[in-house]
Image 1 (cartoon, each protein chain N blue to C red):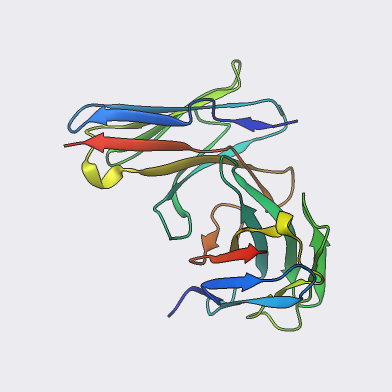
Image 2 (image 1 turned 60 degrees about the horizontal axis):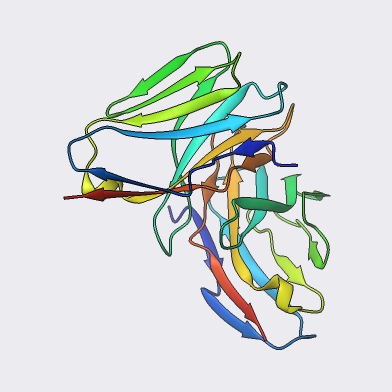
Length: 111
Length: 112
């Protein structure tokens, strides 16, 4: 039981490039979400999904795209990377509103 | 507008003493609160929670107190251990949703 896995751990992009951050969970949780953490800030919700085929925007969705074709996977796409998207990205899954299980994070730098 | 506030960015405590981490909130609709602990280069992990129908919840060395009238909660760690050194986030789910609103976090350093 691996929990929540994220790949890659680190990524450097140039401005304008696109990429996909991968997230997978093996706990059969319906709810999954993406957060970003910036220095001196708490985690901010980017997008979330309450089940396969259903996604919605969080607090800071601009510049990001998501889809949920399976219960297990919830990739986050950066359409055209900008330096303001330099951050640490965390994926989480949850069976209920009580707790969320976070992945180890992806540290992204956009030059 | 920050709905969950942790006004102390850092806290240093001697090993064996009590650590008290504070959190204030502005949204009176919040009815459930969670504390997460985060070590460097790892994702946050759930620590303890409290429902608004309670004013205290205890789990081993960790106790969370909720003062609804003051819109304030605190996490007490007794006794503090060096392994408790981490960033602690207070969070609350939005009404009817799983979406968490996080505070900015407090970095706790427990000095041996």
